[in-house]
Image 1 (cartoon, rainbow, N blue to C red):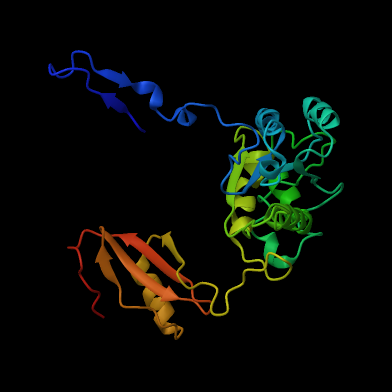
Image 2: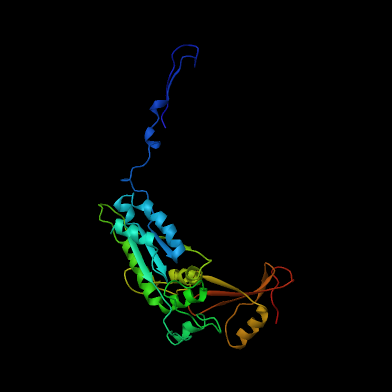
Length: 289
């Protein structure tokens, strides 16, 4: 900011001409649509029908941005139901303007527990005594239906996410454009329904996994778990420590921290696993066998 002040007489400020109009008025002007307003590309994932309406509000704003900024935003719609009519109408009015990715997942008709899933996925997919149901529209407000649909169509979800990342990560055509080095991820879910509440955790975990192939491959050269710590609270960490030692697992000597026994072990992939259980012993007490 530049302020020019001209003194008019010996009395000081009496007749001072303060030219505030010399202030750089560019700071007060609204930014034009031609100016870039998005610094970091974003991957925006909308789970279910209700979040799709929030996406519609976002889309109504994005159409006024420059094409360069529009290319930095990916909109992913993941649902068991078809997109709301308002979304479909907006798409017809703005064909090809925004980068949208739409996937409809479903519970297979006639599925009975784990007959369509690999065995490692089965144990954390189905709620005991609950057989998934297939609905023509939506998850019926049942979280397990959303979860089972996501597990069944996991490969399709992986492919869609990779396509969306590739779209916003592609090198822009502008001269001097820099390659994309980071992406902001936003997940919108309505936890009162069946789809969003059923697959929010699944999608969040999938986004944290390494891409092992394709243009977005980010698998590290060394152990994949380096720098990652996972904590589990259990009933008796010391009993677990003794069990691990009896099986030849190199678990670190337990100690007390924050009122908890802490038993730590590093798995073959480099992940640091900590098992904790409450105790009244003083801080930094070490376990003695």
